[in-house]
Image 1: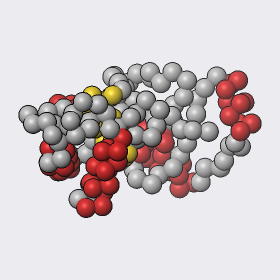
Image 2 (image 1 turned 60 degrees about the vertical axis):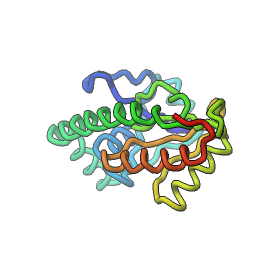
Image 3 (image 1 turned 180 degrees about the horizontal axis):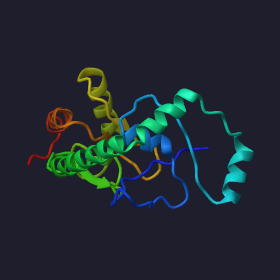
Image 4 (image 1 turned 90 degrees about the horizontal axis):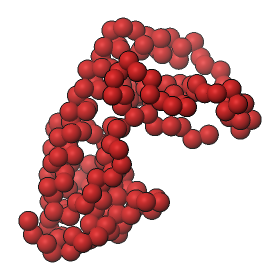
Length: 190
């Protein structure tokens, strides 16, 4: 059963997650608990029955339960809210900056997550290019040590890279490297 990626709530106290609420992402992303795995689903009983037919529920260890309860303490919830505010601010700066780079097309999606999905354009800057996006992906990872995700093979994502919002320094490094790679290979100038 695939996991749903939660979007940032516009109001931290609201539950605007229509059918599924996957606590794994809430804890992992908002509280930055890496490699922590606790999946939970709240849904209509009919949906739960269908899901249980596909995969049996699993036990949760005492350690996992302890970490989850600790992560949901008032102190850690406040830390989560601070982290969300920082990520939202960085996402807005990243979205604003990345569109000024020659060779970047549209930003796709609602952008309610901790990442953005951007189109990489062909060298003439006319249309999305999966070939160029894949080259950027490989250059960033193999030569520059910056990890982005290539999504050009997925439906509706021609020429796309998925870029996770990082710290201010990580985002600046990403933007500098992306600009150098794209503008250095573009036939269209600013």
